[in-house]
Length: 425
Image 1 (tube, rainbow, N blue to C red):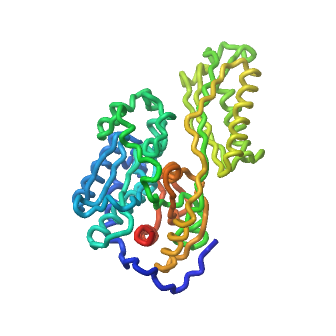
Image 2: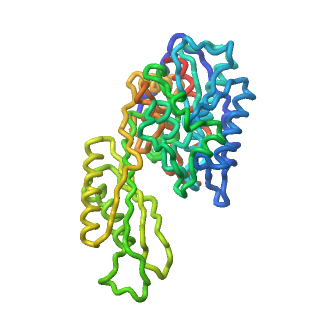
Image 3: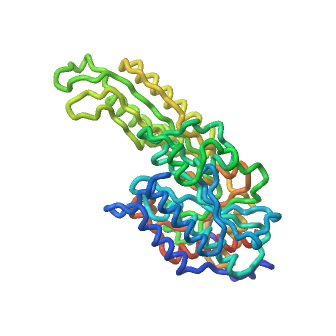
């Protein structure tokens, strides 16, 4: 749905504020240099050295703007108006995203939303406007789960989903999270102190690049998100028997890599041919010993299933488990399947959707309603509060790659819609 933009009168009592475009774009460029690799991609996996550098820079920027900053036990950065200015008696409007990236990712995913949230708070503080809700900006920790495979770590702690988190989380290479969390000011033994109870957040807003081609192809500059896809990530471990590639007869082999290849292609078929779910991906393979002249002993792979319908997600997961059981029996292998993460689909709040759409129209921006095929912290926060999301176009529809980009005008437009929405709620 594309809006028919007309010159509508501004909503009453909503101050006509705009973000500082040069300041916002300058910060985006500054953060794009943190964790940049030789190929031009950004590598700021959660709790890595580069992630800590970005976190420290965000804190410096916020404090220099006169804002108050804290880090909770989960490692989430929370930015508020300073004491004496903030009104804790007002309902809290949480605004944010995340700073961490995937390996060789882009400069905008997550970071744009955090810096726009900072810009909203700074603009409100400088204007002297008293909003109906007390704005709090948040940079959630380890949303991507690229290094430590506990995605949505910070937002899951915030909403109280502690029981599903490991007692001693580990990175892919076995590095404990405990020490890495402590280095950013968190505390694994005090996660309960970072939980916000039901009703403590009046609403949550998140601004993000679309990560797809829809807005660019339509010419619309604002996307009003209707809902966020559900996601199930399975870890499949295939165990066979290592052997010499030249001397082990084919009929005597118990090759886990050949079995993994069959599983990989079948997973693709779940979405492509069988259409059990919207998309299905094997994005990671770990092979041991990973030698060119040796039959593998063990292969670990991830299966990423996504759909907006929880029933379809369950059917797709069961299909994977049935497939694995068949392959294990036919090839005389031991195969284990564990759930790495399971995130339910979430619907955006209708009132927030309307507020975003009205703000876009008042500012003269064309918008359309569209779902999110990627996961976001917003769908986790939706468990304790109404949530709304704003998208801006992605050039070429690409994301999670060095080429990820958005026109400067669209970045500013999205931040202005975020600010106006925050003020009109």
